[in-house]
Image 1 (cartoon, rainbow, N blue to C red):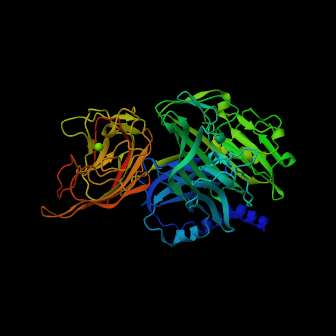
Image 2: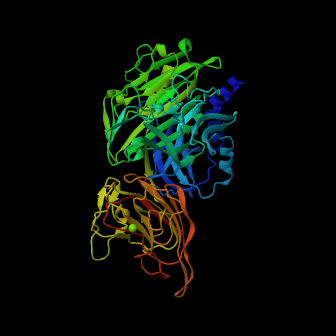
Length: 627
Ligand code: MG
């Protein structure tokens, strides 16, 4: 039975491709948005997840659907894809196979107006990766022709310490179990030799904060811990399932008691089984010191991304192999691009390969590999082995890892192919097509759609693909006026010192029809108020606080219906729906009047104004589509 399941999983790409060929030449046109060229580069590709930054492409969340079509000669073959909201949105798909290094593939993307029956046929047999949540945990699992397979479980609720052990071992914010494709549990938590080991988790060990040692790893010390705070998003789809969750790294014994030192976001993404016979999943941890003083990570032999294997893997039935050919005997404290850990569970060898992204700090990273006397298997990417480093307040540190969970012992050729996919991904370019509906207001190149008014020049500064407000230079607005529309805009508030408070923290705003302000402010982590980020200024607070930290790009997706007038008399209020960072914050809210400094309401359309309010707020990727 298990063999049959694996065979079906392996056959999956072929089944999908076969259905695609059946459908070729039957695809009806949506609205063309662009032509994509994928350059496979120096490697053959097989089951490679890829994604495209949709800056400059008018795709809004969650109202738009995208269709990806591969062009092969005269054939137009629809390809499974998944749209991820964000700043910017991204389109994901899997390169099933490229015949040789240097291959170039051509695709088109369309905005789907009407999905129609054709895609239903395509999707009928499609895999689906689901992030399923309850009060205790979120589980990522894949649905395919061979049924449901569990991939991993993330604990948002506190898992209590083992019976009779200190409450200090109570902990949330870790992964366990991680399952193999055949369903064996590969992780372990609270083993008696190390009660603080928690499947897959990521605390630091020897640190100094405000002059005191804090150990976030050895929970029994009572100096520090890590807590789940909230989910930022969950995704399910045909290409991946995943989540973003925010964690607090808490020092327990500061002069002021508990204090959050680091805010961490975990981004976990498990790909559909069409990527190959095993599970491929990505892990990104973004950490920022949110205290007023820095966190010093001291040189130590372990700390960071850790994995504790099932107790089944021990002695002769367990193995390590690094990309540099090191094993349990000589691997500890060496550096590598990847490390495979494996062992025997349920009668068969199975394993997990850990890849460290080349962009990681101190790559290739040092590793903690347990020597023989430890008997069982523990693995840790430990950049702290290379020496102390300091996390300064307000600065993001990003740690990126990919995991390949497989049946059987490590296959070095396959592992190197996966490494090349991760370290040297295909190059993807898009030539955008002029949309027949949407208007690019700002794609990073110029201010041709904007004016600062008839009597002054635009004083804002172009920086890369973005525009940054120059304080004192005045607001800017679109040359064109709008009535009903949908709109997408990305913005970033600056990191300011803690003594700058309230409305002084990264203030700007989007004035719709120059009448109604959708506020922009640094309101990270606050209770929503009617003058904070996401508010309809002084009129309605956002339904929830969806703000990210200053210094990070955020997005607004807006649907606006103007007030209706009969002559000079208003007969219907304006209405607005807003998603911030993909989260609904106003659902068809009525605007009873203009906000604050807005122009008076009236029957005539109005421009979009971006407010200059004395702060260096940045914008990028702004488009609008009249309805
Ligand atoms: Mg404002």
